[in-house]
Length: 421
Image (cartoon, rainbow, N blue to C red; front, side):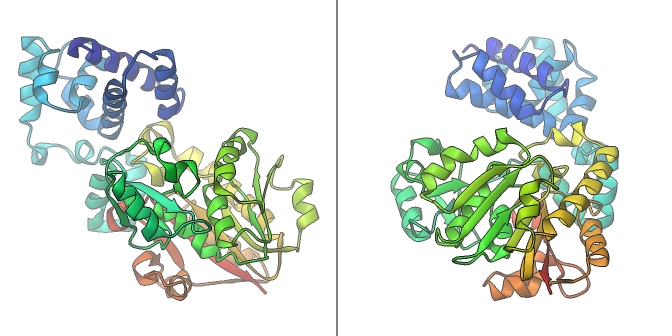
C-alpha cells in the first residue's frame, strides 16, 4: 500500500477508535474484517499506530495542537511506526517541518501529564502506592507487553517445547517465576505452529499463570474457576489436576465461555465442565455449597493492570466505575466463598492496580467472613518454589500477591488467599 493511503487508513481507523464507544481491540478487529484486502504488514502498521496513540494520547494531543490538518491525521503521523523515510513519503513539506519540531522536543521540558500519559484520577493513587517508582511504572505502561505462553504440562515438558520453538525460529526463554511459562520475542503467528495446534502451548501472561499456581489444585479434587471468562486459568488448573477430579468453569457470559471450547478441545482435558450462571447466587452455586476443595475468583475489574495491552481503558473508565466494581467484587467473593468445604482454599484476584479493588476488598472480606483464615502469599509462594519475597506485598509478612509491569514484566495483578476453618 502506498504510504499516503496507509497513513489515511491509520487516520480513519483512529477516528473510530477515539470515539471510545467500544473497546479498541474490538474496533480494530471490526475494521480488519471490513477491509480484508489489507496485508499482514498493513494490519500491523494500523494496529501499532492506534496503540501508540492510545498509550501517549496526552503527549500526542499536546504536540498535535501546533500542526495542521485533521486531528486524527496529526495523531496518526505522531504514532506511525517504522522508518521516518517511509512516513515522509506521505507528508507535505509543512507536515515534515512540524514533525521535525515535534521530534526535537525535549522530554524534560514537558509537563508531568505529558510524560506519564495517565489521567489524574489514575496517576494519583499510583503515585501514592509507588512513590519514586511511579515513573518506572508509567514508562513501562507506554511499552507493549511481551508474549507469554503456558506449556501444557499434561502433555509436554517446558524445555522440550522451548527447543521445538527454537527449531521453528522462535526465541523462547523460561519465565522467571512461573514454572509453566515461556516468554517469546516478537509477535509470531502461533496458530501456524504444531505446538499450538496440538495444545502444547496457550497464550497466558505469566502473572495469570501465578494466580492459578496459588490455588494449588490437586489430583481428584473438586475445583471451581468462578469467573472463568475465556478459560486461561481453567486450562492451567485442569493440567495441574492431571486431568482428574472435577473442574467447574463458571461465568455469566456464554460468549466468553464459547471462547473456551476450541482451547479446551486442544488441551486434551476431560475434567472441565463449563457452565453459564445467571449471577453469583445462581442455583448451581447453591447446590455446590460446602462441597468444593478450591475456588479461584478472578473477579471482573477495571482491568487497569493490562494497560500495556489495552491502553484505551485509562480513557474509557473513571472513579465511578471503580467504585461500582469494588461493590460487585465483594458480593462475588462472598458468594464464591460459600462453595468451600472445611479446609478449602479461596483465592481472590484482579488485574487491577487500585487498592479499592484489591486490598480494600480482601480486607473487608477478612473482617466480615467468619471461619476464613488469611494465608500469607509470600510463604505460600516459597512453598511452591517461587520467589515469593519478590512478588508479595503488605507490611504483615507478605500477605498479598502484587505484580507490577515495571518490576516483574507481567501485567498488573493482585491476589489474596484464605483457608476455610
